[in-house]
Image 1 (cartoon, rainbow over the protein chains, first blue to last red):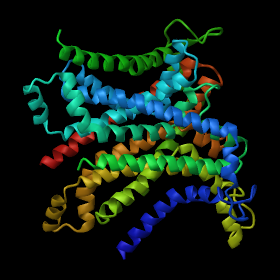
Image 2: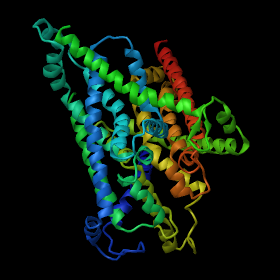
Image 3: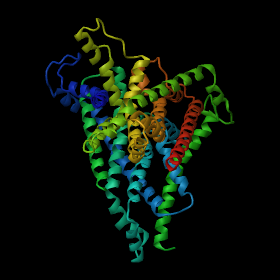
Image 4: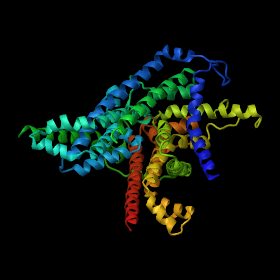
Length: 255
Length: 284
């Protein structure tokens, strides 16, 4: 009996989480334009989406930013994880602490503080400021992912390499990096979804020249929606889910 | 200097450099800006003041802040009430399906929250799914007004942030040593007693972590109260955004952001305290 109740409860929570998304997916296939009544199956909205330059540009911009920020964050985050694991230096604990605080900070605080930096430096808001902001958002997640992978490393391999005369660079390039590769790629994919998921940081740190998808959807939701947004949401969800499943697969391999 | 030492210095130096530039300096600028006065011509004018923080305590702003904190706290409580039993049920599921069940929690977690908010609009609006369904069944004669109400904001916050509560709770529940529960049973404790006196105390750090991960973002999610709450409900995030983009009062917005950071610091402190305590209790 309790077992049955438990399953019912879990099913309700899943229903709560997924029903709205399922509805969006369903209506992206509905030929009715205005009402919710089911008027028949169609793929028209996906075609319309393809022909809507504003939406496509915004979606494309989002993907570009996500890919660039993920790459930059993976580079910086991997290096940060490497030095935290490999070296003992003054300020190491501060570095740890800063990464942790960066990870926990509310998005709006990160967004505002970076916006002030960009204003102080007279950087025009657009692609480059958005890229920097999303990189800052993602780095701590890459660093912790890669660092936890380093934690399970056999340290004797590094010691053996040192005994055989390997330099720091060689150790990094030929031992640590290949061993950490799944976590590095996993970190990239997490960053990619993290960047695509962001609304608040994009809202403050991009300019009118570089519109990204969440902001586009934001203004459309306020002005009134056409069903091609449904189609777009489905496409974006599919991209997110793919990146997520891939990253899970890669991160699990270590066990 | 040999190559290895150079390599090491390069890595440490570059990491520290970007951290100082992109994490430390922005926070310092934020802190500095919160102590300035708003200028008539320029954005800020020189001269340090605590006026912005005092203004946060003025009746109008203070009541907004209290409302916002209340809203976020209730959202966190709702998430906890749904999330704790749910995470507990997850840990009881068979080991084969657990990864899949967990993945199903993570997918919404990683889906763009604006897309998810938009999905909620489809459900809640006057000619939305819920109203159409209720009208069709005949339970109601005219559509319920669900959008643009505090209720819609609650639903939006819980819907968006629930996975943030479930994931740390799941990790905490998973880490409870089953031997302790066994020992409890051997000493004559029932399931409920075991749950209240072993499981819950040991998962306090998870409860705090989850509450923090819901409460803090909930304060800032201005787009949820915009889209679902209309102009009526204000979150701290709406206030900060308006100070920056509408009133161009950067010092005021900065002061509100710093206050939020302080709240985060306080919660992190509580978390580390709880973590240490539950660690000690385990030892005993």
